[in-house]
Length: 252
Ligand code: ADP
Ligand code: MG
Ligand code: MG
Image (cartoon, rainbow, N blue to C red; front, side):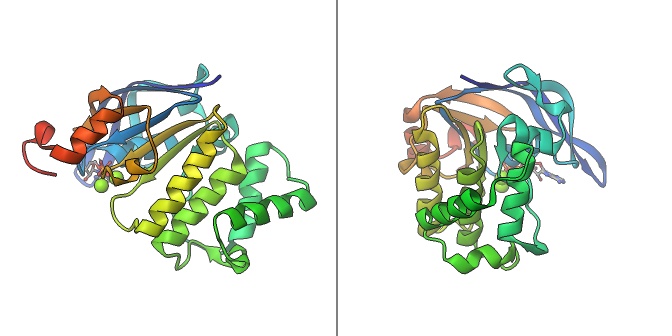
């Protein structure tokens, strides 16, 4: 049983005009076995929350804390966060020409486990995970993220999730570029991940459609850098009907 706790999190981003506060006191607790959805209008700070958890250098935590089983996540390096059991899909968002998918996955696995995986089992594990995601074998030799389609990026994200086997997954499902195919891949992968029963998922999304495939236990509505309302899956249904108009005054 593990707990990821976000308490009173305030985060500023560096802009040319100086620091700008984006997160204004986020409180959220995810326990193993739970799936939480964070939903909210564009610009409400959802991705900023994900980047902050990932330790992105552009985002400065000005107050508050993030604890994983009582351990201070914000004091950890990016690799330490991964080793502690946090999976942050946006951890390596950039295109990395010259690094193959296969090399990247082995490096990430080594960082997370604190030692290189045994080659024979690893090759088998990768093959199995790729088969489950209907990924062709030659994908493993592609340059990391270079020229990946939206769907390929998602497949790669879920492939990492399967192979790295974290305690908590934070997935920022960016609003655009998720076609129905990618939506299925993400949904099936996340559902397989949480099926083991001891995993925590924090799924960040703008649209309700992914919640037709992934059933959250809790829904948090994010507005202007904080959680404005919380509820169960019925809250997502309300958002599906009404959008964010109750929170921001205009249809999102
Ligand atoms: P969401 O993911 O909910 O759409 P974001 O976290 O991407 O929201 O953005 C929240 C607000 O913070 C927006 O007003 C956005 O312009 C601003 N913001 C986020 N990142 C940066 C950045 N790197 N530089 C300047 N402004 C940023
Ligand atoms: Mg956005
Ligand atoms: Mg976003």
